[in-house]
Image 1 (cartoon, rainbow, N blue to C red):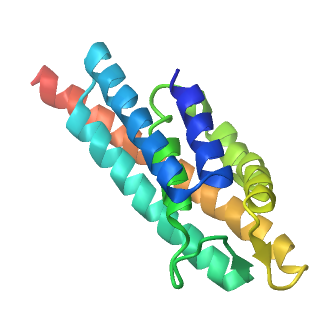
Image 2: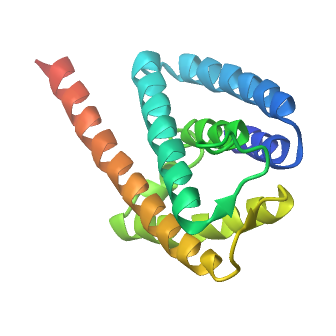
Length: 173
C-alpha cells in the first residue's frame, strides 16, 4: 500500500497541480503514520527521518537543477517547485515500509542511487514539461543526480543503522 501511495503522489505531482499533489501527499502521510502506529513503530523518530531526508534531498535537487540548467515547471525562482518537495516527502515515507530492501547491501543502495533514480528523474522532467537550458546539460544532471542520490541513500542507511543500534542499546539497559 505504501508503494502504491508513493506512485499516486508521483503522478499527482508530475502530471497534476500543486494542490492535487499536496492533497495526495496528505492522504499518503495519513496512511503512512497510521501504518506505523499499527506495527508499533517509533512515530516521532520516523517523522524526524522523513523530514530530515526530505529537506536535505529537496535542497540538493534544487542546487543540482540550478547548476545544470534544469528549469522545472512551476519553479519557485530560487527553489525547485513544491511538487518536487512532495515527491521527496512521499519517497522518504516509503523507505521503512516498502523500500527497505534497498538497504540490504551497501552495493545495492549505491546502484539504486547512482543509476535507477536518475532514470526516474528523466521521466519526471519529460512528463512535467521541465527542460534543460542546454541539451548537453542532461548528461551532467544524470551524473550529479546519481552521485547525490547514492550519497543521500547511503547516508540514510548509515544514520538508520546507528539510530536502530542506539535504540536497541537504550532498551536493553
